[in-house]
Structure formats: structure tokens, C-alpha cells
Image 1 (cartoon, rainbow, N blue to C red):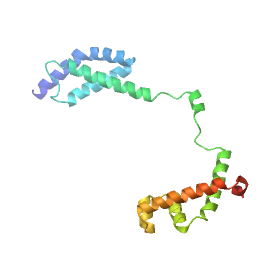
Image 2: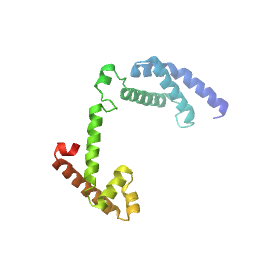
Image 3: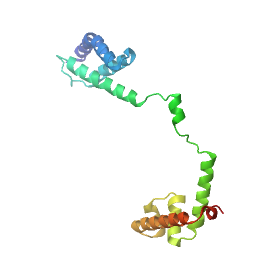
Length: 175
């Protein structure tokens, strides 16, 4: 089909199917404005898919594409439900409160104190992991330990810290 013939064909398809497609999409979406956007995208895909749609009977292809696009829009909008004031009030705040900040500082202080009682190898890998933010592989390259050994040292050290902190009375942890 020549370019002129193709342009005429596109115009005739749009003229014949635009209104039925808008009506169909409006029923699916419940909104004429979004339906027009979906139908416009349907026709754009028809033009882009040069030669992929049946020239003699394009209706089935157009309605299938329109239906799929409308469903995609509907699913997207369901995921993007507006946040109501009541729902926002129920959500946890990002900024911790003063009590949480104090508790974290106390826990960090206790952990640092107990960290000094661990073997040097465990102290080093734990500091590199949690203070340096390094991966096991990076820690392995720095310390010369195997990646497996780094994992073991971190696991063993954290378990020992947990036991030490759990076994220490709160009064001693805070001093």
C-alpha cells in the first residue's frame, strides 16, 4: 500500500471506529476523558504497528488493544489511590521521636562498649561492615580473610554482642 493509500486508510479507520472505541473505553473506565486518551493511544499503536493489523477488518485488533490499554489504566489507578487524611494519620512518621532517638543512642553506646570485649578479628569485621558499610567481599579483600570466614566472624561477633547486651542489667548498660 502506498503512503497516500495508507494515510487514507488510517483516516477511514479512525472515522469509522473512533466513536465506538470511545464509548467502549468509557464504559470500561467510567470516565470519558481517560477513555479518549486510551483511544488516542490505540490509534497511535495502529500507526506504529505498520502492517501488523488486518487491513480489511481492523475492528477486532482495535478493540483488543483498546481493552488492554483501558485495563492497564484501571490497574494503575487502583495502585495509586489517593491518601486520605485519616490514612495519613495512621501511617508511622519517618522521623523518630525523642524516646526512640534516646533509645538508639543508649543501645549504640552499649554495643560500642561491648564491642571492645570481642576478639580483634571480630571487632574489625563488624566495624567494617556496620560502620564502613562494606560488603563481605570488600571486607575479605581488606582483611585477607575468606568471604566465608568474614561471614562467620560477623555472625559469631554479633551473637556474642547480643548475649553480652542481653546479659547486662539495664543500669550497667546506661553507665
